[in-house]
Length: 127
Image (cartoon, rainbow, N blue to C red):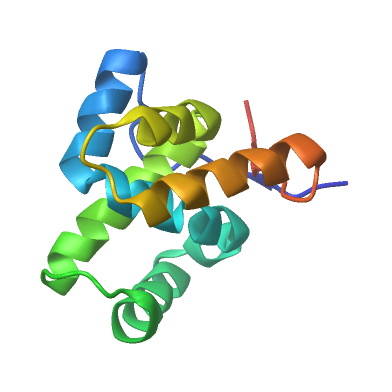
């Protein structure tokens, strides 16, 4: 049986709010890293694990500009998207977003394909 998670952040309701959240975090960031966050969702289970993951991601993965606090906000947006069950809609938004990096659009397409094939599974949440 798959592990079920408890939602921790305010859910995103509706496509307008989703678009605003993606634009706030950056469509390229969301597209480029969403698969990583889906695969690493266990790392957001507790505050300590989340802080350790943030340190790891900031020091070893993140190639963008900004402070650690900026990055935390972007990752929290990705978590909200996952917890809201809107990953597929978010990836469709990224693919159609003007000015979004080609690599991010390619990563979004790859995640959609992986979800469709069953190679990647989204986290399940308690109701």
